[in-house]
Amino acid sequence: MAELANDRRWTPAQIAALVFGIWWIGNGIAVFASEPSGATLATDSAVRTFGLSIAVNGWHGIFHLFTGLAGVAVCRWPRGARAYVLLMAVLYLSAVLCSIITGATVFGVVHVDDLGSADHAVEGAVMVAAWFGSREEVQGPTPQNSQPREADIPDSPRTCLRR
Image (cartoon, rainbow, N blue to C red; front, top):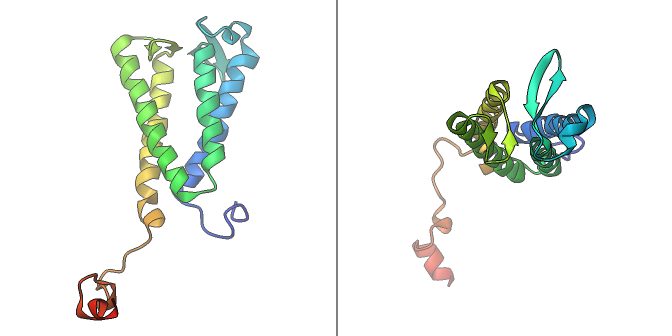
């Protein structure tokens, strides 16, 4: 991974974007590969994975596929990855809230059951943690006792004399 980031340490947001991107791409593909009726966008069905039955439909598969592709696409850039994990946190936690309010349909089209909602809640929480964990690394560390140099202050006498 370090080679992809030009030998710089990856931020938690970059790692989360890559790992969850791959995970969500796999989920999207699984919907279409394992359940033929899942290929019809609005047809609700279930996919059996690891002994668990997960409610899905074609929209659910597309949702995961596109959010996963976006994660893989931005994982190389710390700022892009940080923006991505924040957006995914808002999107996935909103999906959980929508599922709780409406029952089994998220945003009016994505079929989700309780297990899917719990999974999305964990994914959203991890994204929030990755966003917070990457804040300092993306913005750059700030020294504890740093004072701005006089030349860096716009209205300092030295700055005014140079104008």
